[in-house]
Length: 394
Image (cartoon, rainbow, N blue to C red; front, side, top):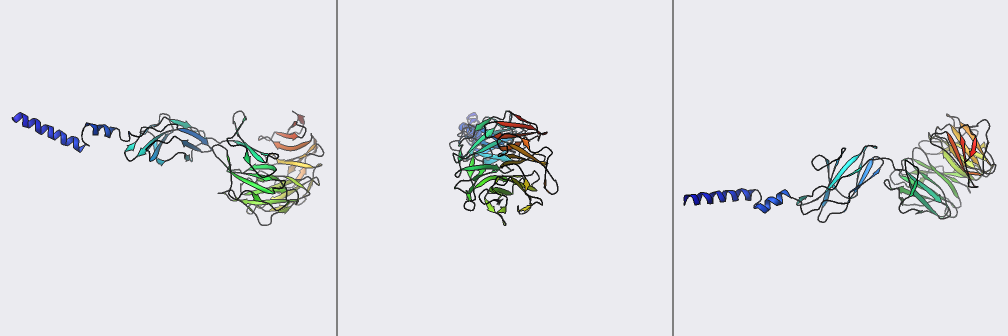
């Protein structure tokens, strides 16, 4: 009888311990599998942009939120990773270091606990490169990703994106947040877009298109190096329009004093690398208008000695990456004018031997090293010039 009582007391004592821990053997299993009703997130992917990574994953049934764990070394777990609570897909982690790999796992969370971790995803932040082309005949803008290794172009999902009638020119701001397109023909407007940092897609800015004065026929657009102002040539009114950029939304507001007088039929505008000087080709009178730029207001003031003589029908203009030289494609005289920029005043002086023979050039650019000049010709050819300006058809 005594042994029976001792056994009964031992059983009751053990039951009390189990009850304090959550009861029965099935309760022990629940404890070791809190959140076991939640599946691990699947489809986790990491996409890169400049100094940031976007994480996406498939929704988990029953989950009320998610946690992200990250590490700079592979094999990240919920034990060794840095925890970010309460995230949702897509989640963007910013302030990262370009060129450094980051590793992630995601867990699902609800009131009962946290799921096991997803499979690992990793990415290395880097600057994404995109190209945009204004299609005058189709009234839209084509968008491409640029392969940083090969230079190959791949169409962006959703491209082409709608613009106004007869888009003539396109420019992106230096921060990579906004794109602006001037619509000539009957549109007389400027379309503005935000750029998707991860995929390059274009989303029209609220208030876009921004109308210019009637019958201005905008032909060219550029954003200054500070990203504060947009400059637009107006062929019909022989002026340059200037707009301030809202740094948050990208919206445009014409500045006080705009438009500013140019020559006859301004066609193209460029700005030097310091943001101090602007130069405009005047198609109708064969000249280059030169201006100083007010760094605070964006206003233009004609430089003493401006306008400067160019060839016949100067169409396209560019400043080289060093900020020392200006090159102009003269469509009517089949040549290229070259100038030295006075660093303090912005005045132009023709380089010895200028103009240099070329084709029927209607576009000109300089490679990033500043060693080569390229012109695109209306006959379908491209001309390459070394800095010494020996022009070679390619």
